[in-house]
Amino acid sequence: MGTTTTLRNGVNVEELNVLVNRVKSNPALGKFQFRSKSKWISRAHSHSTFDSLHGMGMDHLRSTPLFMEGDEPAALLGTDLAPNAAETALHALTSCLSVTYAYSAAAMGIDITDLSFELETDTDLRGFMELDSAIRPGLSQIRVKVNLACNGTPEQIRQLHAQVQRTSPLYDTFKNPVDVQITTG
Image (cartoon, helix red, strand yellow):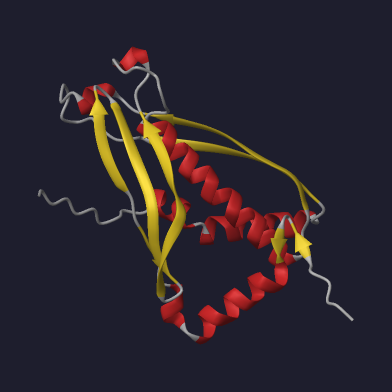
């Protein structure tokens, strides 16, 4: 007799539990290194390639490399061929939040019927242009509205939101300083 796969939020719960137990029994498997190669094209346009990563104790080569483009809107002298860095950062955050909500809810036995996000971020060009040394060139705040429909109780939903904020890698990255080292070659 065959086994039934439990899919919750599109997540294979048994595989998720196996993954958690593998990392629990061998913490080195939990160490990942994500990689990208980026090239400036012209003006504000750039191109990034994602073809390999390291995780679960080994290197993984993608059979088909993934690509992302970056640009600026015309208002910032770009050609508007792709999202700018701030918009890409918002996408990265919601991509990570989506995974964290789906996996966490699946592990908690919660079925999500709808999940979406609305985000805004602020920056002030005077920091980038060095017109005012008191203004940072980076993003000053990111506001995230989570729209979640699920079968969880109010207490489970509160716990889910709290767990996502505790465990989402990019939420943590945005909330805490990250050591960035730049070398020239």
